Length: 204
Image (cartoon, rainbow, N blue to C red; front, side):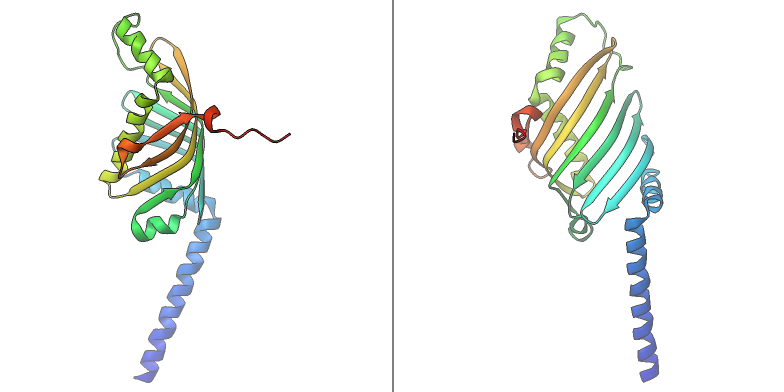
């Protein structure tokens, strides 16, 4: 009985060691990380995804050249980075992003039919997309609601967005703002601001 107990203890220790080795290899092997992300995205049958590279660390994530197509709407992102304790997501289902950035965002809605491009209603809509932060608060709240519906609580702070929206009629609208604070549990309290409004000038 003692030999059996000792064998079981040694077996458990060996499995733990193998598990820790695999975790370490996962964090240092980008090809494994990319394969794992691509495998997870295959379950999203409503959209088509393409990922360039993935670098996952215990407290940070970097992804390059992300493309997603959802019907007539597409999006491309050259670089995504955020700092977050990923262990918290694994243990509690909460993703607490302390800072981050989305650079080179191309949100392509140019193929969506909108009717008369010269109408006052459409021109008013373009102005909202261009300068109305309340419009973008609604979009951020919608995205966060998707996470909440999947059982993931997400909190964003200091996430910069730099890119453009490609509208019908070959119009391009730049977007440069920062998610100051957003919580999937409190979507009405989302705070956005132009990047210039929260940027700290470099010391001379």
